[in-house]
Image (cartoon, rainbow, N blue to C red; front, side, top):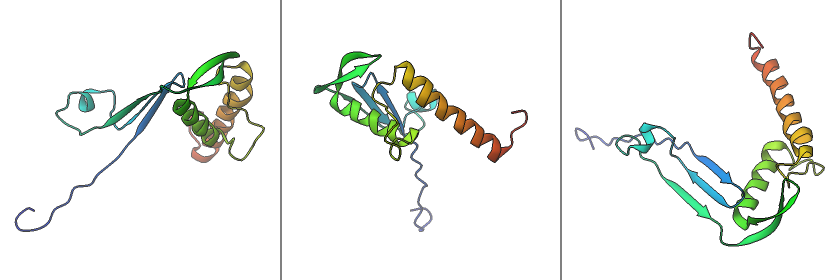
Length: 125
């Protein structure tokens, strides 16, 4: 309340997520800068999940013990971001394989760059 009137503040949530080695997941709002890290300006929150339950997975062509939650988060995010939700032929299982890098990651990046250039007509391109 200010001068007898109700006052509200805008709340802006800008979340981030980091998945490391399919074992550790950090989800929060903090930026890696003084504004977020010094604790005197912006209010930030983050949660770290370190998996204790592992499942068999593949990383760079080798069998790998991944965290159950971390792996499921990465697979779901990759499926959504890379279009594998609608195209079952896209394999996001091994993110370090040459096949994934060339056929999925680079193909998606090239397609996105083409769309961006057509839509925004950036000069120089």
